[in-house]
Image (cartoon, rainbow, N blue to C red; front, side):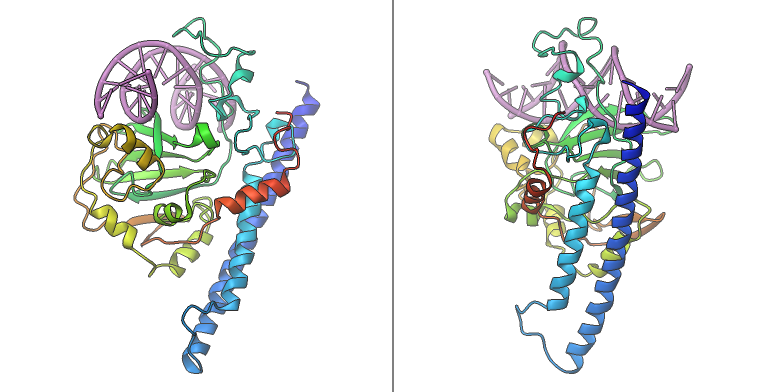
Length: 339
DNA sequence: GATATTTGACCAGC
DNA sequence: GCTGGTCAAATATC
């Protein structure tokens, strides 16, 4: 690979980063505008009229569309990988990924075509392990929770690591749907030293997997599409906007009780909870030392600009179908991309 | 047998 | 060179 190619990739990455930053900023402004307008409308309606039940506010609708557009654009750019040397999003269901580690189902590009079927533990497979392209930057956000399964997505643990200067190991989870749908969402869970009853959960990337709308509504307690980097105030704004939102899913979590992985893991149950429909006690993905605790409070602290905001969570989402259709429109090369 | 977890190895980024 | 993120064979569980 020559230096010109590297320079081009570097430039592309910078451009993408700048575009994302601009979009995030624009999104933030739009959110603030939405709050402002909704506040004004709220006062207006209170003073003069009543909103007919079920009749959507056109301002809110419009703002929601604007925000959705921002989120879509951000998602597309966030999934753009300059290293892939193609100008298309790399998250395409069932497609191969140029970054070898990103799609474990199709890693052949890592090892010169090794199918992986005859891998030995060491030696023979040398050069295969750890072969991946680490995401230099992806949208991340951190929550603090007493349970690691509070988001109710289906996660599969793929690693655990001792981290320097930390008492407890960090566990790595990826979306269960990664092999089948290429969902790139991951999360890292680490028990807090100060309070071992609490877990710091860092989410990385957005879910692109498809779940039913009903499931989606019940299993996405907070917005994977809106909350960007931990230093972004957008999420804080939105969090405040939704501070009084629905808390039913949290109550269902509270009622879930202590469930260890081994306890609920019976065949078909796995499928159920993998689909994210686990609201009846089979939802936990808990590793050996990640036990749940008395959960009467069950709140989460969202960190924005280093400040914690305690809130219940019920945000708006980027709909996965929207995302897919977006890819369709943005990605004319789908399926034929030269990864 | 199928699926999930564990854990040592490998590699990218700093 | 060190650290952290990911891979994948081995192992565990159902």
